[in-house]
Length: 114
Image 1 (cartoon, rainbow, N blue to C red):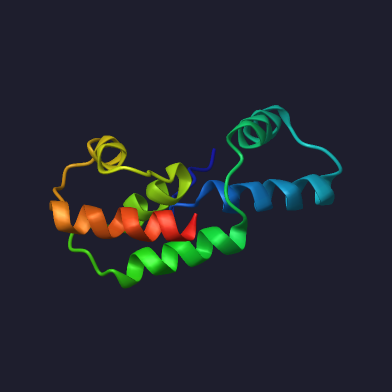
Image 2 (cartoon, rainbow, N blue to C red):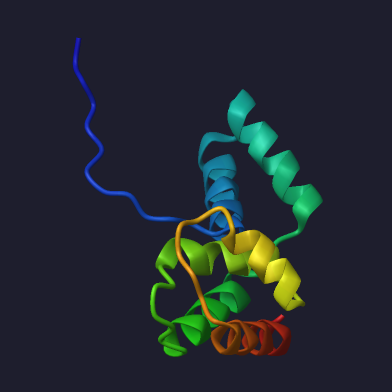
């Protein structure tokens, strides 16, 4: 039996997942059980369009905030926090600290883009 290996990991946003599910649905003329569940979740959460999500990711990356990694940025784009308290809740699942000034910058960018 073969043992698959993970070659690389890259976080993807909900909007990217939505576009990939659409491509798979067209290609295979249907979805398997798990993909159907993902599609149902995406319809309920209504993520940003792919273009808006990419623009927001680029804007957050331009802030050049120390210790803010790609996975954090993707999570921020998916959840679109409007207050500093919401951003704190999102980031508390990770082991890093971001100061209040940088959090304000993130909230400003998110509120302008979203």
